[in-house]
Image 1 (cartoon, rainbow, N blue to C red):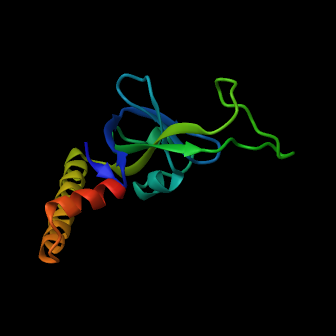
Image 2: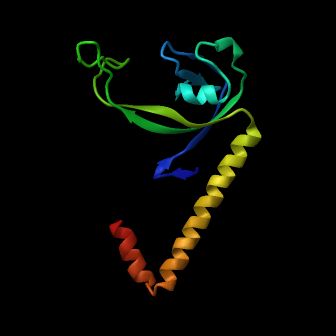
Length: 144
């Protein structure tokens, strides 16, 4: 799995879904067990307009992270219960990148991994050049 700012990225294939009333998209993978929140702007970037369910072409390739969302409020400012009846912050699988083709998704993930490796190598080289010992670096990494 790739890492993005400390969050595990999961790559999924969306095979069905529908737009919500507010324009976001709820996508489902092959197992249909998990719902993936896709912000409207991402669907728009692929050329899909709000409500155009029949125009969406599958599969769609997505990178997903779990994001925490505070409870929604009604018109009176009171929390709206979650679907399971609880109140409070809810973790939701949220799409952070969306691709029309498998090749686009692979290319983006490979580039992300390569970028992370190069940054880590450059940081390690700078740390070594500054005269820090492995013991000092280990201590710093434990603190951070």
